[in-house]
Length: 126
Image (cartoon, rainbow, N blue to C red; front, side):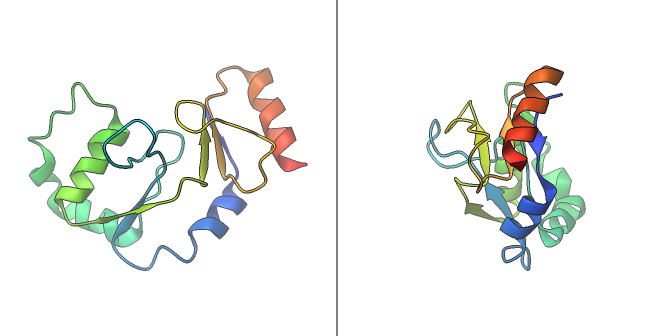
C-alpha cells in the first residue's frame, strides 16, 4: 500500500477542470513553483494526448535525479500543457500533511503498511 485514493472525491474535484490541456499541481511548499506530487497525478485527456504526440521533446530532461512527478511537471510545461494548482486535492505528509479526517481531500499519502492504509481509508470515509 501507499496512497489512499478516494475516486468519488477526486472525480468531483476535477470535473470542472478537465476540458482543456492541463494538469493539476498539488504541492507548492518546497519548490520554486508548484509541482505534481506523487500521491495522485491528474492530467486531462487533452494534456495526455499532447504528451503522447510529443514525448520526444522531453527526452532531454534529466529524469535520473528527479522523481516521475517532477519530470512529468517539467515535461508537460515544456509541451505547453497548463499547470493548475490545487493545494487541497491531496494530503501528502511530504508537503502539507496527510490528515485523513479532512473531508475535502481526495488522496492521502504515504501509508506504507496495510493497517495504516486501512485506518486512513476508514477514517476518510466516515
